[in-house]
Image 1: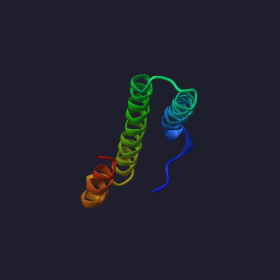
Image 2: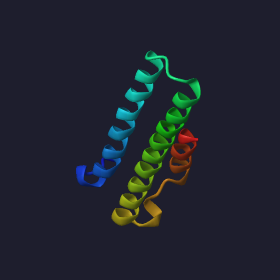
Image 3: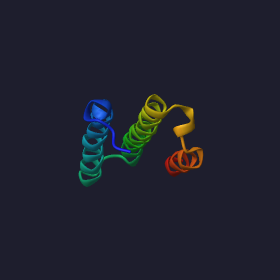
Image 4: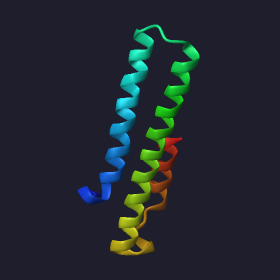
Length: 86
């Protein structure tokens, strides 16, 4: 399924922010920052990416339900998508 750009705008924004944050973490490591500080920031990047993934699955599910009703949702495929994020 393809999602419309307006449906993914917030997700893209979140992932771009995470990308910028990851760049900062890499810079911290290159500059010799404290390990604890870098790990704290890396955990924040990880969480932002995971939330982006869950938002993407939720958006796709909402679209499926809106277009085809509950019968249109492939529960096995949905489970596989959620597990891929775990």
